[in-house]
Length: 223
Ligand code: DX5
Ligand code: ZN
Image: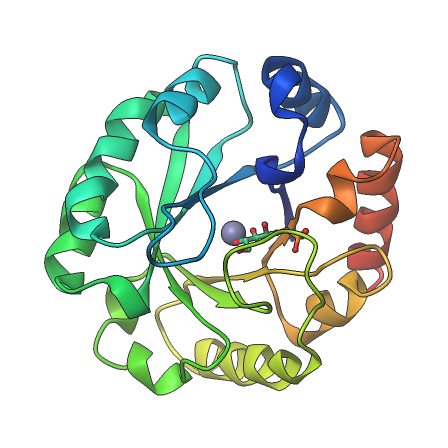
């Protein structure tokens, strides 16, 4: 399968959000990654339901919503309502989801893909009981909370192990990798087996998004 690039809108210029959405779409983003942080699960507050609603109306690439919030059980569907048809998927964090099975089922019942994110220190073994229900597994390669952090190298073997598990299974969820990914390490992540690669500051922090995305794509394609 073609590997997908999902720039994280969190690193864009929020004063020009609509323009940033159209620039990143024109630049060739496959999805936009939308990082929602609540100041409880992570020590940062980013954007919430009204912004997701505005994004949904801005003709975005498919929205890949990453909920780093307490009580995703309650909020997941509110984000689907806000983003409307533009919502491709909702990813919830394993560490904060108390009613994982029912929340996954309700997301899927809305016709939206469901992802489960694992913090760096959360082992892959937690996937065992939910693996067959997941459309995507997100391996965090930084502690969630802030853009622009340093990629944790020791997460590469974790991504490789997950790739092996999926290759040996009948069910094939996508692997998404998120945190600290830039042009100089994107190939490492692609080689390890990522299907969807998130990059925030690595794209929005560069002057020419289209140029960065095309350079990233050639790194990925030659992986
Ligand atoms: C981290 C977020 C990431 C992050 C990506 O908490 O989930 O999506 O903002 O930004 P960079 O690529 O700058 O690490
Ligand atoms: Zn994210």
